[in-house]
Length: 199
Picture 1 (cartoon, rainbow, N blue to C red):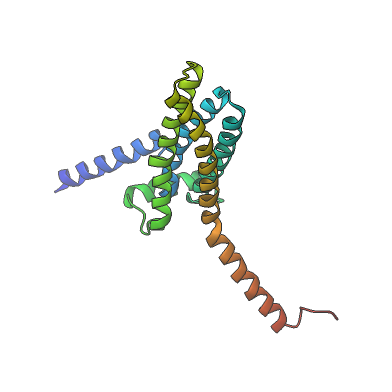
Picture 2: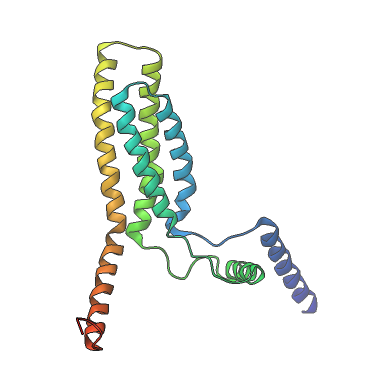
């Protein structure tokens, strides 16, 4: 019995030490896709710098700008840093991770799906299309099919920019509704307490 208890304690301490050395941090919900978004976004910016056609470059610049804002927005859904001493924060991370491998309440499912779609499909697919566009442009390919593709791509980039901006707006809808509700409540409280209006 004592031997078994010692083995369990040793295993506990070993795992605890591993988390300290690895700099473990808690799971991040939707922002767990942010690293992948950032990698794809870096590739997109690199391709954007290689495009020669002015119209395509302008449209893709708008796409990159919207994609960067979306990525930043997803990153805001990570758990906030507690205003505690570094030692206390480290202990909280360690023990939260050891005893609770998964968060008790998962991220909002629609938001999680939006983050997954953006990181796993939208951005990688777009990067692949832009890569082919840049290759045709740099190789000076001028077949009827290639010219048609490049012409359609210019309009496509504009459509994607608009779609990404629509996605970005949807990510702020809940904040707008919450802020509007808070304003209405505060207005009623100030009126009730007699502090609103002219004296």
